[in-house]
Image (cartoon, rainbow, N blue to C red; front, side, top):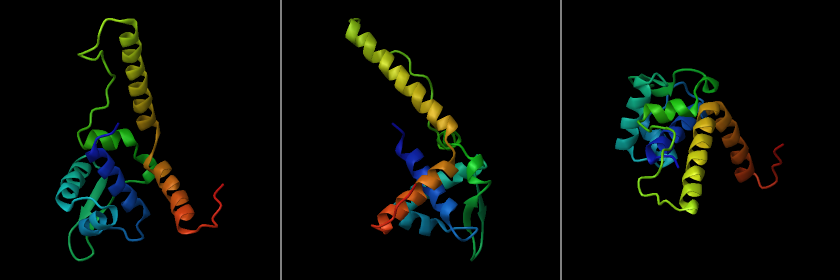
Length: 145
């Protein structure tokens, strides 16, 4: 599973992707996405260093996406906030039985699938999923195809 920091970073980026304004203040992102503001500020600084977001000071300031959502992949986000997606090696506490070996192989396969999904999925794809869910949850009669 993904670390909390990565999930918060993704929530913040989704907020920026759907914003009608070029820049969104940290307080607004924190409130809408229910992320602790101090942690969000640290995450946004990491995303800025990774050139995934840009910042602007002043009254109309805040954070915005540094590039189109389709050009930001989830692997980049995880890497920016310090989550290392790497191939799983043998578990340090694995036994030597056949079932233990099968479970180690399962963990490795799941990790490879996670890495592949994170590498291939863009923020834009998550944003489109978000829009679909918003339509479903906000309108009981909505039909998304």
